[in-house]
Amino acid sequence: MALMHRRRAWQNRFWAYLVLVALSLFVFLPMLVVISQSLMTNMEVTRWPPQIVPVHPTLFNYNDVLTRQDLRLDLWLRNSMVAATGHTLAVLVICAPAAYAFARLRFRGSNALFAILLLTIMIPSQVTLIPNYLLMRDLKWLDSFNALIFPGAANVFGVFLLRQFFMQIPQELEEAAVMDGAGYLRRFTQIVLPLSSNALTALAIFVFLGHYNDLFWPFIVTNSLETRTLPVGLTILNSAYGMQYRPMVLAGAVLSTIPILIVYIIFQRRIIQGVTLTGGMGGR
Image (cartoon, rainbow, N blue to C red):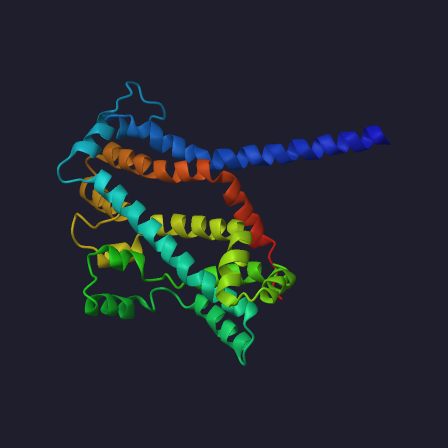
């Protein structure tokens, strides 16, 4: 009986690993093709049938995309990092107090107000595009980092995520602080926030990655070379050189994934914890 149970467990593990390997190949094969073709010459890329492995690998495309005078990949990368970091900090500063208020403060209509807030998630971003653009114009924030950082900082998903986590913190901890004369602000900053590092880190990672990869809004509000972000720059690079210099475009795409890869390697455990946190969180 024990032998049959062990054999069945081994078979289940075998099929699980087989499925994971197949999915990994499905995900990584296009990436390997992009990296391989970024090391080819333009003649090799356009050859038919297409080549998978470069005959004479070269780093010329990477050097070209980094040194062209009309392309500023380093500047676009810096802009993306600054905008994504600033937006992430703004989301945390705004969403954490709002989530704490919904989790701990009890007032008439609080549940209805929170339900209305959640309903706004279903509003497509295209609906608010024109009002947000007009607001940026009136504030004279167009083509600046302010337009890349502050719009969308009141993140409804962030409020929901942190509220659900705050509600799981035992209120007895705060009641003990109340006995010492602590108010809401002190309890929030000295008790709740230190206990919520996992939730705050998970939200920060999700927001950073989403804003770093955002194309639509930065494409609308930036015009000059100095304020463009990396996704906008790669789009312009593809439209200008995609047909004639495809390997150079692919080299730019490979370079753009390096910061995200570094973030994933550093915060891999936090990302997994964040996925577990958001998946296993239930409402009250």
